Image (cartoon, rainbow, N blue to C red; front, side, top):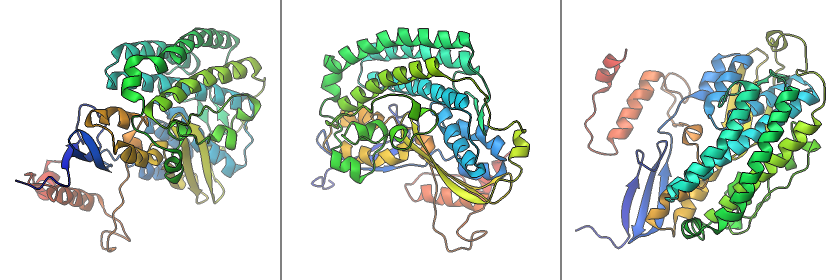
Length: 417
């Protein structure tokens, strides 16, 4: 019999009913208590950062929007803001207000979706159904304004593509009145509901010093007493023209993250009302020139663009080589910043807490997938693989993990269409 003194290892993933996307956790347990945790990502690598290098800046708006269906406006906003800085474009105030409006509607969309998922993970399906029902209010508003419920396609270089009519303004304000009533209900009942407290209180704790050490972002950091928010720290769009509070908590557990997200929905409603009531008249774009002419030769330079996505600080690094296509785009998504807190907060939790602890950061796994392999420079270029070499490397890597029979590299290559 194997020596169990060091604990028993339990694999979770990469395919698992509680994981909506592939990730692999190896838990070391002592009875029902998790004493150690490791994780592996990049089971769903899509090569977005490489794909953008073959497209123009305008084409990349629509590609980057599809990094994530929940944060699509966040990614296009971060990207367009960076390109606008390279071009020294001053976005008109009306366009900045519309960007802020869509961004806060998207924040509500994201947090309500998370609240429903969290309810489902703890077996509280009534909360899941309530939250997703109320989420339809903002989904309908997004469709009313942009024509789409998920990928809004409203951003362009220098401004926005769609205006906000007076009728739409009234519809937005009516929607916020309806949603405010629901959020007041959630703020009063959810933190005090017995099922929520039993499954979330003192679970998945991330103390403030750990949150700071690991640079936790978004609701994860703010629920641990770290009051960082790009909208306040480095205002963009119309955030320097509106009043709102940064919601924080000092308990650092899953209940605190729930309270913070519900509080942020209330603040988003507050921001939306201000933006909708105060939106100035004016142009929607910084230049009357067609985008292709505007972007014919972006100055050679680089820029870091920051945006407070629903999950936390989103960073787009953009480098231009003087042409109409970027030389490099690197994206640091908030989930990547928060993964280390998951590994640490799993320790000391029960095995049954794993799904909700993982869900506690509202992870987007495919957003975070990257591949980096150190080579001797012999693979088609300096530290690079070509496609066939990458496929062969992947097959060899998986074979080393277990005695799984796989077709040979040549056989797989022959099966390709």
